[in-house]
Image (tube, rainbow over all chains, first blue to last red; front, side, top):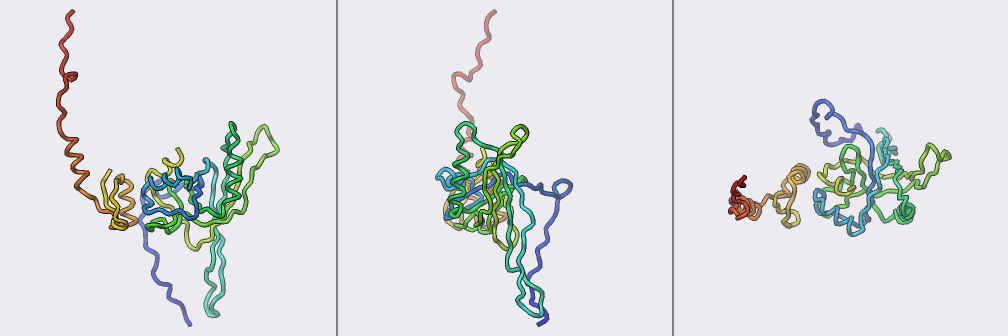
Amino acid sequence: MACICPGNLPSDYSANCGDELYRPGGISHLVFIDCSSTLTDYTDVSEWETLETGGDLVVTKAGLGSKDAASITTTKLYSCLPEVITGKEHTINFSTYVVDTATQADFDFFQELEENHQGMQVVYFGCDGLVYGADTMSDSGGKPGFDFSLQQLDYVQPEDGVNEKAHYQLTLTINKRGILKGWDIPGLIAALTD
Amino acid sequence: MKRVRDTWTGVEKEKTEASLEVANRTMPGRFEIIDGPAKKKETKSEKPKEAKADDKPKPEKED
């Protein structure tokens, strides 16, 4: 066996000029959605707002977020060929310093997130203005978010109470082959973070 | 805003031009612009306003 034909080559894309050649990094917010929720038209902001008002979608306060390169699992399937990719794990790190100093409701928010995360899907907002969600986002009746595992979630209180602030820190992983794609949804980030 | 018909679900609704532009790029052919109701609204709003009594020029004050 000489080779397995890979199928189509990737489609080329055009690039703009100057600063528009690049996207800024960073993740500003995480969005947790009930795992059974779907959208018929992901570009319709009112559908997202309906999920939010119905208690099926919640957005974290703004924070510091990042996603490094995913780790890939390869497996040897053919003696005469190189290993092939059989798994890919994406890791999202997020922390927020924004808390509710009036009623301390932030403790309950993150406590409930930890307890109930298995019934949720996640979407995240990039500093590039894109909404990162599942490939099924554009399907009518598709799930907008990724299934995820929570690896770490806690309230961190640094030793130095003069110069440092307490904050929440969480890490989640998404098992998905391919790229986590960003979607342009005009008006959505402003509507859900106001 | 544009009034459109979602050919996937059969639903008619209003979409912003920005949202429609994205939808046409990622889901080609899904939304059809409906001329009828949206056009009627435009025609109605283009009618010149009838001058109200308040809009009439006020006589200049006497010194």
